[in-house]
Length: 160
Image (cartoon, rainbow, N blue to C red; front, side, top):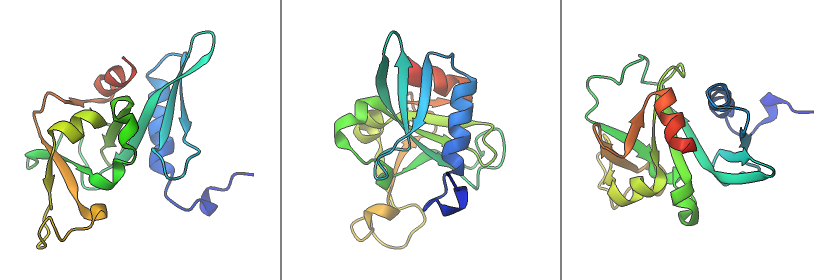
């Protein structure tokens, strides 16, 4: 029997994201927990006659983003480098980041993030070279054409 308290990491953001994805897509799409514990959070499938794998979604939420709109003091969008797990599937993988109450989000294709993002140490005194991969960020400008904002905008981008 599944017991949420026995999970080794916080899966609530992933579960909430899956509910939102399912709410805004039709029945031909499914979003399932990735059974590879070292992989991306969600596997996406589409049904025609068969179940066809279409990609991955890495889910994150920002505790400090408490409003519906993007905070006015943000001048770039940040993504944890450690979330870029498998270099082989970047063209089929999306990074989806929600606000604290899951009422807004932004997303980017991992391939675009890797190809067009810049490394940042984000408020840390250590140099980028000294930072561990777990603490480094990749950033894109707030108005980047590679980033989609809004729940329906992100979902339409992900499934097309």
